[in-house]
Length: 232
Image 1 (cartoon, rainbow, N blue to C red):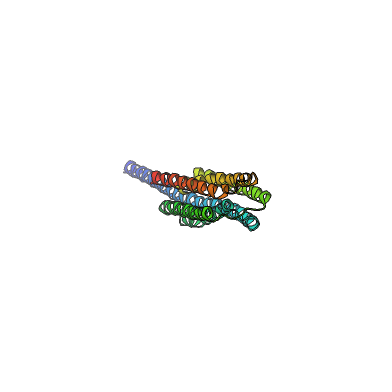
Image 2 (cartoon, helix red, strand yellow):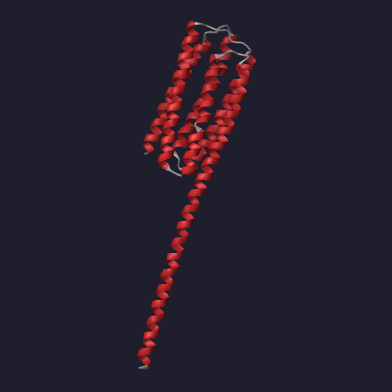
């Protein structure tokens, strides 16, 4: 009888140990779930930080360019200004997508970015054609050159921030937006080229460069669309 009781005690203790082990395992798994939740929150906060910094950089660049624009009357600068400001605004839905922590929302916001790029291309193209039909003088070429440099620097900084953030967070929307910002930097360099051609006695170069900007913007919109579609 005593041996039987001892055996039962041993079985009970063994069962208790297994139950305790299972309980500990379940507790660890539960803790791991909380860890995943924390990672998700961290990811959202990092995403908002990325888009906020890029937003700030582009808004500052756009504000400085707007200040210079009124003394130049340059179409190329106007195109760069409108495009940069539109690019800055696209950070708002991207930030909202990160707050929602939804990859579907991120992709949707990426398509929204692409639509903004396409709209900006249309606006630049229409204004360029209008300037070809009705030429207007371009002044303050030194300021125009400085504004082009500001636009290039602002877009390159924004591109670096977004591309790094896109790779780190695995966000196709941020990656597409980073590609957009980098292409915008080339557009800003075109503003400097416009200033040079006008200084050399070719004022028609300003609206022609505006048309060239339209092609660059269209190409960027196509690249962004493909990047987002591939991630779906």
